[in-house]
Length: 266
Image (cartoon, rainbow, N blue to C red; front, side):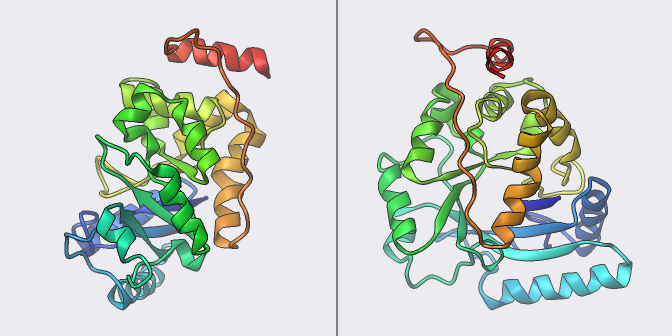
């Protein structure tokens, strides 16, 4: 598998805290079936994280160490852009990296308030030849309140990523229930680990893949977990799935009702 969102490189941002932890994360990732990870270092206009050529140098050094350790994993480079008006105002001059030298860029927003002009932001990226991917969309409060708005974001030009651990948690909180509802409704294009640690936020994805098979069937699960990440690496277009619109009668359904309706529509 290819993990398009991780923070495995140490000393870069709020991710791995040491080389030893990064190596342990790599071992966990390989045990989960991951052979390629994109280190999506945070790019924040107000925080001095490692960026630019220093980020690529860190990835080269870590890949060499993986080889010395006999760990069959490669780490590529990208950024997780934190949206702000300053970022958009200077987007043409900034030294951020798209994902693995592709046209795809990973973007995160304030968790408590998505911008009012989401369509305009997508347009600005698309105008420059980039395809924006919204990171961990299930974490935004507006999406948890109204998951169907994600269809509007897709129509505006975004692709959607959710975190594997929120699929795996099987509806234990509102964030995970939202992630699973979006997945069941075919409004997710990528599932990634967003791993930061070797313990509580480890690079685990296998359980989420098995859950996706149960919800969507193997073909759709393979599209999300295997084919779309591979197409991203090859800089090819990503398939936009047909959304399975679920009747809500003006109220939000629980996950069990969502899945029941999905099964009926298969």
